[in-house]
Length: 426
Image (cartoon, rainbow, N blue to C red; front, side):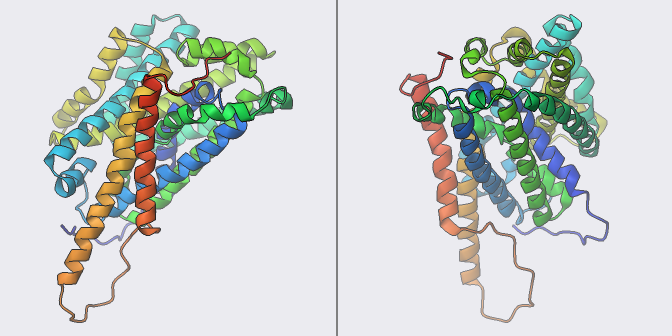
């Protein structure tokens, strides 16, 4: 179906704001989960895997933009999947989207409770409740509010990140960073189990339709997506090198045994840092990263569920959407807290479906549909129009994104059956 797009007379929203939303969604999961998950493959292997995953995940997000361009604004992932792939695929895809969004919100809520407990002595469960009811209100308010808060949080993270990483870089030991005391080829066997975490670290796709609605133009939304994933990659690179240059590989055993929880990582980092002030700065950055991702993921899930359940934009309708978005992950966080890496691992397989496999299938179906439509048109001259938005690379790009998604699922299945080596810190 074709969308009727209003003329763009007003100045479009800032690209910085959109890029910050994407970066904030990515950075929380990545900052908290990547150090422990990448400890097996260590510095060089981890960075190579991140670059590769960033390219794939940026491309798959742009594929969603390509499909959305033929639909009215406020069309969601669910709307286009139902139209192009059918009700059954859409139902399954919706379950996967909600599962990933819910499990990430669950992980952020749990982690926030642990951090608040460590620094303020509040019981983790009570701290998690305060965290949700205070900050989810920003999502309830509006996308614009999250945009503004995301910019503030990103500036705060840049400041604390800069001070923290500069301090860490002064303490970086090259032999620790590169682990020169050991052969590196043996580390390559752990790269496979790292890929599912990298996929989740670049998972922003539930917010693509929101971003497209915000800019009202696919090419602007693409620039925001690319800017956001580049910011995230740069942040991950500096962060991992800072951590791996200070905390020896063998020290990750206790962190991994505790499920990769952020509080355990911070405690381990404190033990090798001489300055308490530096440790506090890094803790502040970690807290901001959790909050920024909580807001970004919460916004994406909020808009997705509003469309799915057809809740309106009145205060009553937004309250209903707020309830189905934030209450279930909060309840599960209170009842079944477990390791951060375990949560991210569960999310990875589901994310591979709707962040890689389904976007590739949607783009292929959309292109076939358009090709058939074009062939049926008569040869009458048409007025020259702006070339429609399309991701370059043809079928090879679609196949590559699809295979990557399938590969993530295969890796997780092999890990479940202990068929792949997993680094345990020894």
